[in-house]
Image (cartoon, rainbow, N blue to C red):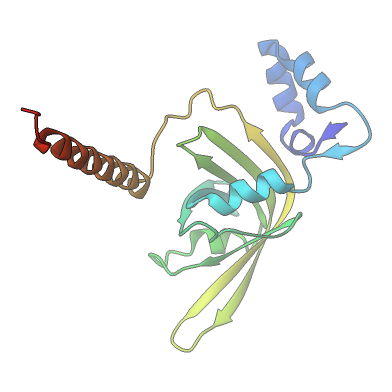
Length: 196
């Protein structure tokens, strides 16, 4: 079974680099065998992972060939899985440089990286992005629709463990509540008759 991500990312130059490094045979065996293509459509694991994310990085390329990486963020679910081949998000106003939007005029290809630092997981996506202007009462927003061409889960080896501030605060609040409960139990026990 061939791998959609490898079909796109493993260009001849990449294959040559893999051969020089000694990893070519393993990748050819793992990613490039068979007629059926896998990792071209998102499944339940990818959908759950994407829905839980608060941010991602998106790369585009300008007409002069320069790559540009931009961060996008929001609450869990801001990046939506529309169907197994489509993602969508609302492009909220930022610094109004429009670099990504401008780059898409000549080349609609994008690469996304989503990282869950707490669980050391990383999902890479390749696709084509379409921009749809949406008029609201007071502002104009853009709805970004990404047609997925391929994806790949990346190894967790060098992902540092980090936690969201509200997750840490929730754990601290639970700890403090448990301490208060135990202090209450201890106070009752030490104030009981015959205990000094």
